[in-house]
Image 1 (tube, one colour):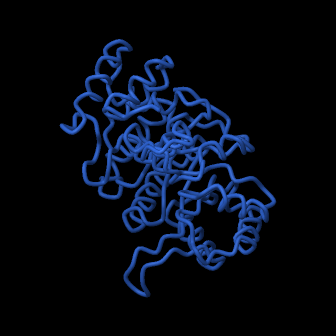
Image 2 (spheres, one colour):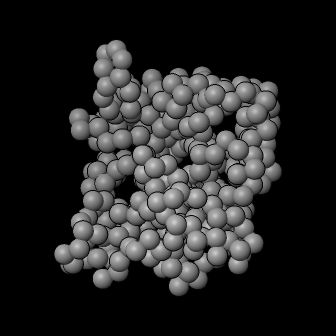
Image 3 (cartoon, helix red, strand yellow):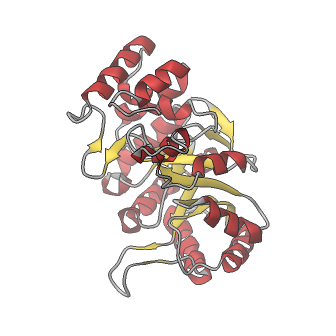
Length: 310
């Protein structure tokens, strides 16, 4: 595993983080094994959200920490808040001071820890007041409950507006990004063209984050779409899988490691978040940091499914 220092922090983080969205249905013994295998393989970064498993993912993770209190200091724990999924009183996004503080208190209780390393706002709230959020973040940091802050699925302007009022720097923006779901990369290469790929759906978010030392965390890095699931071994992507397999054979790793290496090759030092609950798959994925794709190999992967270049 390779590590990097998250900008504007002293956190030495693994280049690959373990996403905990799907751990809520695991047994505590299976999760304990997954966490220990992660740590043994250098994965010290664990990504949560209050809505994962309706809170059960954080709660189960907290039970592992309770059983093994010595491992907390070896971890960087990130969690997210701001999505109200529905029920009573109804579905909404909520970045109010009251909700953020309540979410942090509940996350700390579920995780059975006395601090969160990084807190992200999960989705942009149209009614968010950046001054109120900044004041809330400041209070949480001064209290020691949260050490650093970031966002998820935010545009550059939304980040800039929030950053204007903050006393500390946003350090993370978590966005959907994969070989197939690559709109955040496409538009830049198709600048001033009439092709569909030139449509800027992401407002230059990768360049903005790179410019401002905000780490991009690709979520669903192995996913083609919600309907299709992963592109690995998917019949809709035969050329891509053939290309990935050829490179996997060359580097002596699995195809999924090559797919992650494609993201790691970007100079902005992205940190993909992988959501596996399989010990075997996790061991395969961490080998992505052993692979340094050439520029041509990166473009061969990008173009493998007839994706054009201008």
